[in-house]
Image 1 (cartoon, rainbow, N blue to C red):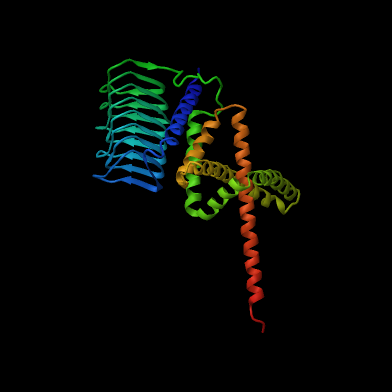
Image 2 (cartoon, rainbow, N blue to C red):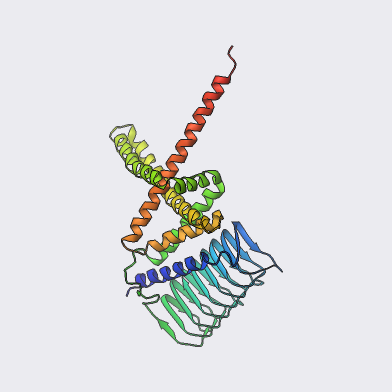
Length: 356
């Protein structure tokens, strides 16, 4: 099996574990969301589920740390007594983790002085180990560095370009294994591991921007998908065909060519936005049925589901396309309602204005 295939499977495993960890445990652990989530020095929380741009642990998480974020850091004073299961752009551990670490990230760093009491399973673009790991380490990454200060208490099983410094200690065997993650799922995944992680993170960042900048519009789209899924899907399909057709008509005119180029770029952004809105809306509806009404958790769970379905042939693309159409149609309907309301408001203002 190629390096790419093993990383695809590794990314699938990481994303699946994260999705299973996040959803059923929402009621058992404290849930926090926002642009920045911080466990302060001296603070102790009983388990933590997070969806945020930045997560910093200076205090103690008495249990597991699960979630999705752009950046996750456990500082040198931070302690997680259980497991760490995260999807993030970067995960840096300078403190202590009592259990296992499972992460799908772009950059992973286990700092000098950090300690992990269990095993480490990481899919990343770049991974650095400079601290102590009591258990086995399984890592699939483009570049892997085991620094002089690293002390790995078990086996190091890897797939990627490994640099092991002379001062590093590895108690077990060092094994290059191109089948990391395996292909026991019975299908050949489509996206690469790094591509799946980067795609999830890019969607998460866009979703965070939409939630912060347009909270009302975002919730209106979720309500539209929940209340009128068929209508939203139909309008999505209509929009998907109508907009490119209009752009082609513009392209046939001399003055319309620049408009077509700009319009195509803007429509691509709209399509991306519709994907994020669609999965947020579906997750918001599903979580609402179990009395979980957190926008940030809905965003993270929805985008994790989207990332997982990328690895499922036939069914995955069909479901993803349906969710996209619902998101696109709901976006079009909400914007049309907004346009109508503004027009009616202007007419009302004009009608009420005194005559000269």
